[in-house]
Image (cartoon, rainbow, N blue to C red; front, top):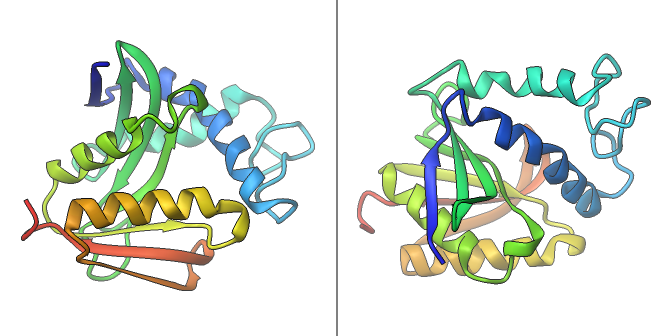
Length: 184
């Protein structure tokens, strides 16, 4: 299997935007009927009822291609097929003292459990050196996601990461932090 993680330009944006509703649907399974994780009255996973179609949702995601050097949309491919994506933010789109924030990370179902997600995450981490943070849902419904990040970060940092559950700007989350200036 050939795994590629590439910074997605405007010409590839539609590929990530096509996968984004699947990502939001997956998240809804971790959060249940909580606000922001159910479809709006138009059947779109967005809090805003003004978002009526997937085309409207595409516009919301456009910011990732409007701020190069600050926001980084990565496309994950396996044997040339789209397999997932990750969005990496830098200041001012992350917390105090954070250089890089994993805003979104998603791998399509057929590619899960194969090591692709870990390889993609590690490749992205290796591109940027500094203080990293990422959040995941601390609920029991997301135990798979929690285990993934613990395993991936433990291997990548040789156990040199922290985790804590706290109230973030995205609600109560399990937050992971690490600094890779020394790890690679």
